[in-house]
Length: 127
Image (cartoon, rainbow, N blue to C red; front, side, top):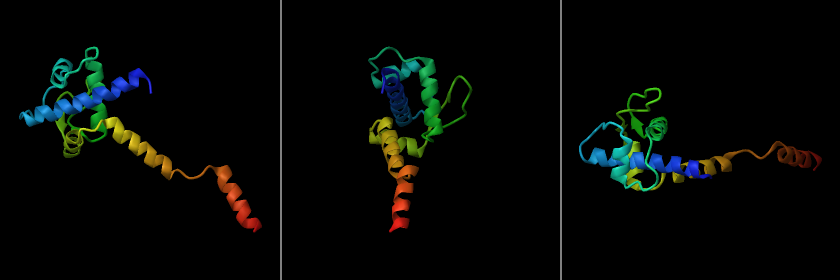
């Protein structure tokens, strides 16, 4: 993967970690703030942008890790961590790990290419 994709996954992890920390402190639906997220999770790369945080919140919303009201261009401004989101955040594994595992599982389920299936069928018919 490239650096932009790596950063995108890192921002998603940072937002999820921040939400868990805020929830543990008693803030059920904190306001998304790129600077606060960066400070809370110890972000050392170039500063988080509001667009990156908005995109991350939308990803988390689509994956059902957060709930709230999505707003075009803003993401989910006051996300609420779901039970699934809390479980994933507490596990401490990067979100990319789960996505990679899901893709590997999907690859195992894909049927054989048609050429291979046709050759196998032709062999079975001849015998």
